[in-house]
Structure formats: C-alpha cells, structure tokens
Length: 627
Image (tube, rainbow, N blue to C red):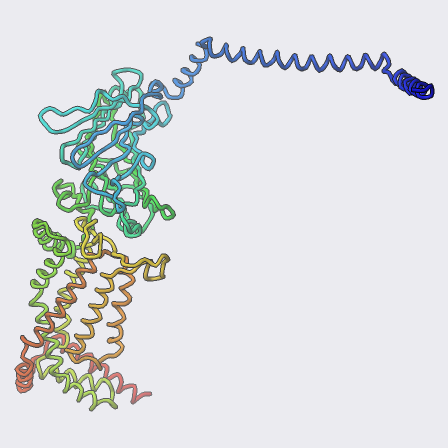
C-alpha cells in the first residue's frame, strides 16, 4: 500500500469519526429515551401484576365457599317460588310404563307424559307410531299462590319407588310427587296401566296445600296440548279427518269442524276431551268429576309443517275446595279409532269420534255394514276380498229394489216407439201439448215415469253410508291388495313429481277403474233402455260427472274406489241378466196394451202434474190473447 492509499483511508476514518461526534445525542435526548424505556417497562410490569391478581381472584372464588352467595340465591328462589323452591332441581331420568299394546314415557320434570307409542301400529313409513313426543306436547296443573300463577311444568316430581303391580290385578302403577317443602304437602300423580288396555288411569291428589293455594282460588286448571305428527301417507286426508271432540256431562257429543281453526269455551261441564287424529285418538276423561264449564279448547292447522298436522290446546278447570286431601280420578285413552274397541267403554260414547255419517247413514253403518264387515273379518281374509263379499251381500239385499228399477226402465223402453211418435206428431206444436199427450199415454199404459227414481233414491243411503265407512275404517289401514299397499289411502301406480290442478301428483288405478266402470254402466244403460236420443244435455251430464269425480277419488281411499268399481260392475251384470233373461218384453208390451183398454188409474202425483200442465197451458193461451 503506497502513501496515497494510507492518506485516503485516514481521511475517510476521520470523516466518519467527525460525523459520529457531530450527530451523537445530547444529554436531554438521552434522558428522554431513558424515560420512554422505563415507562414501557412499567406498563408491561403492571399487566403481569394485573393478570396474576385476576388468576388469584379466580382461584380464591373456586376454593373458598361463599355461604353468603348461596343464602342469597336460596332466598331469591324462596321469594319467587315459595314452598316449591326446593323442587326446582331434580333427576329427569324418564320412567317407562307399558303393557302389551301401549308404551308411555313419563318425565319427572312436570310429572307429565312426554310420549306414547302404540305397539301394534306403525306409521306410513314403517317407523314406530308415536302419538306425540316430548317436544310437541305439554301437560301441567296451574294454580295461584300469593297472587302468582304456578305451573307444575317447571318443577321436579319424585318417583315413589319404581313401577309396581297393583295387588290382585295385572296392572302396573307409578306414583310421582311434587313436594312443597314438606313431606306432608305435595301434588301426586298416579299412573296405572292394565295388561292389554289402551286406557291409562291417571289420579291427581292434592295433599296439604289448602293454605298454600290462594284462598280466593276455587279452581285448579289442567292444561293439555299437543301437535299431532303426520302418521299417514296423505297429510291432507289426515288433516281433514282430525279435530277436537268433546262430550258434555249431560248432552250430546260435539266437535270443532275439521276445516276450521277456532277457540271454543264450554257452555256446560265437560265429561271428556278428545284430540282426534285420522285413525287414532288421545282422550282425557273425568271419572269422579267433570271439567268446569269455563273450559276452553282450541285447534290450529300446521299448514307449512312437513312433520305435524294439527295443534290442539285445552285448558280444563277442576273444582278445588281447599280440603286437606282432594283427589281427581281421570283417565287417558291412547289408542286406535276402532269402533268395537271404543264401544266397549260404554256410556262414554268414545266411538262417536269415528265419523260414520249423519243420522240414517250412521245407523246403516252401525247396524248393517259394521256387523257384516266384522263377521267377514273373523275369517281372516284379505280385506280386498272382504270388500268384494260385502259388496255382493249388499247387492243381494238391494236386489228387489234393483229389480223394480230395471222393470220401470223396461216399461219406458216398451213405450219408447209410441213416445217417439208423439214427439214427431207434436214437434211443431206447443211443448205443453206434447207433454199432455205423453202423460195421457203413461196414464193409459199404467206406467209411472217416476217409478224408476224411487228405487234409486232408496239405494242412496247405502252408497253414502259406505262413502263414510271406508275412509274411517282403521281395519283397512296398511292392508295391501293387488297393487295397492294401503286400502285406507290412495293407490299410486305413477307419480308425476309435480301437482296437477284438480287431479293431484299421482295416478290412482282404482279411481280410474271406478270412473271407467261408471262410464261403461252409463253407456250400457242408455243402450238397453233406448234413451240415447232423449234429453241430450242430460246424457252428456251423466258422462261428465264421473270424470269430474275422478279428481276427488284420485286422492281418496283405494278401498272406497274398489267398492264402487265392484258395485258398478255387479249392477251392470244384474241389469243385463234381468233385461235378457228375467223380464219378458213381449209380455210386458202386451200387458201395457191391455192396460190401455182399462179405465186409467191416475195417481195423486199424475193429477198434480196434469193440473200444473193445464194451468201452464192457460197462461200461454192468455199471453197469446193479450200480447
């Protein structure tokens, strides 16, 4: 390295040292930096101290018992819930009470029935049939204490031992008590169930609460509500068959309309309330008392729910007289809407929940259709075959009426050529003249044109009775026949995947067969009776009506469509046999001609018809004279 390089390095070093000396911090700057560093350190130290203090506080709270806090909580509970404060906590392990047909689950919280399973039945999707579950139901007793309304649903009952058998019977019982801070003061629920019965006994005992329940309170109110789940394939049919039934202590059975949503206040003391589904029902019965006339019931439709169909509510007051011990014998019926099963409970009239039809139609079902159906059911035949045999029996019973109908039509057919002549003769005249001439011909021949209508009207009650019977018959539920897997609902051989207005989202083959058989019978009847050219407007109406009803029957019971199909085909066969082999048309024609030679016998109906015709003719003549 030469001297110039050494000089250059020294110069650069000198410049750097001079720059450092020039830019070094002053004493004030050094003091300020130190203050800032000390402040940051202090903040961090304070944070650590605060965190340690919080941890120590938490540890102290968990390790040191706070008797004062517990006392405060207990005092608050006592003030809010009174003598029932100790029942705010407890064991909520479910209790099962069951027999051969019924399984009821009871919760200690509220002491209520949270679900009921009917063991011999399944839902439409083969899952267990649950009438209601814990989340969709409520059952509690409400009363007033110190001006406040208390409900048992918030408190825990204590099970007095496990389910036990009642001495001398095959019953099982469970007792649950809600204590009011004293073993001598409690509300007790006792549930009892026999070995093969759908009836669950339910006794409510109120013991030692005469000074706790408000002195001015003369009632305790039993509140009951549930949402009924979808049990059947067709929710709409289940919906239109579900409602609340109730029976006054002295009076007829009543119900809220299936198509309405309303709240009803009872006008008289009530014996029982029934939350009816399509094929099953839940009924609360008052045995040794009645529900007071201020009881209310309410029904709502679950329109937008895929799980539930309807919601039911009932508030049922029971008289409370402030005795030391007061008891109410109640019963629940959880079971099928099976006529014979409900009928065995006698004067309660529970079978009235099965909609068999109004007045005469219900009587026909009770005393003719149901006995025949039950008799055939005893042979353990397929229900499709039972419907076939039932149809044949009913048709045999109605055979005399059917014969009168065919005979009247045959007479009209024999007279048809002469009626056609009258129509031709008076085609350009006043229609009243043609009508008078036609009535005169009927009178001479001894034929009543209305005679064929009377037998048809006599058959109508049977048809309408069966229209009510099949959709209400639980025997058909989930019973298959041919391609139908359930005769109590529609049979679907093809699903569109979308809804067709008026028709539905599927094709019911039984409904199509029924409609086709009706059209066939209408056509054959017009051919046999020779009425093709008479009243063309009425003829097309007869063909149109079965097609209109197809949209209704497509969503209705397959068992009903099967019955109507069989009835139509048997009627068609009866008519054909009578026309071809029973009624002698030549002899009938000769008899009519002989009647023409005899003095005509005029019925009162014909007399009235002739009088009306004459009056009508006089009015027309008067109008012509005085236009």
